[in-house]
Image (cartoon, rainbow, N blue to C red):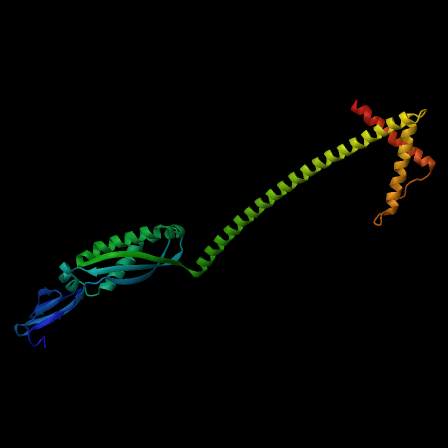
Length: 285
C-alpha cells in the first residue's frame, strides 16, 4: 500500500539507498520516506548500521617454526554518513575483512610461540590498526578486534603440557626435599638435646650415688667403733651385689646372665668398684 502511494518505511538502525533511473539519488534514514516510483525512484538496497561480528580463523607459523591457528573476532559497522561508500564501493564486506585479517597476522611469524601467547593484545592491536586504515575508505568502522585464541598443533600442545607438568613436579620435589631436610635437622637437634639432658641426668644420678655412699660410710664408721672405711665399703658393695642378683632373678623378662659368683668374685667386684671410685676422685681433684 505504501509503495502504491509512493512511500516506504525505513526500520531503525538501517538506511535505504534510493536510486533514480539506476543512479544514486539519496540515503533514506529511518521513518516514513517518499519514494515516487512513477518518477523512476526505486530502492537499490538496505544497509544495516548495527554492530556486526566476524570470526576469522587463519593458520600461520611462528618464529620457532610452530604452525598455529590464530582465531580473531572482529566487530564492525557501517557509518551512516558514509553509507554511499559502504554500499557501492564494497560488495563482499566479510570477505574483505577476512583478507585483511590474514594480512594483519604477519606479526605472528616474528614471535616465538611463548611470546605469541603473551602478546595477544599487541597482535590484536596491530590487526585492528590495519583493518581501520583499510576499511575506513569503504565506509566501515572497526569497533574492536580480539585475538580469541592461538591454537598450536595437538602434539605441540601436549608437549607444552608435559613441560609444564615436569616443571611443577620438579618444584614439588624440591619443596618435598626441603621439608625432609628441615625435619631431619629438627630431629637431629631433638636427639642432641635429649642426649645432653640424659647425660646430665646420669651425671646427677652417679653424683647422688657417690654422695649417698659417702654419707653411709661416715655414719657407719661413727656408730660402729673399730671399723674402717674399707670395711664399710666392702659391706655396702656386697649388699648392692645381692640386691642386683635378686632383681635379675625376680624379673620375668630378664635374659640369662652369666657372671662369676662366689666370695672371691665378690671381693674382685668390690676391688674393681673401689678402684674406679678412687680413680674418679683423683681425676676430680
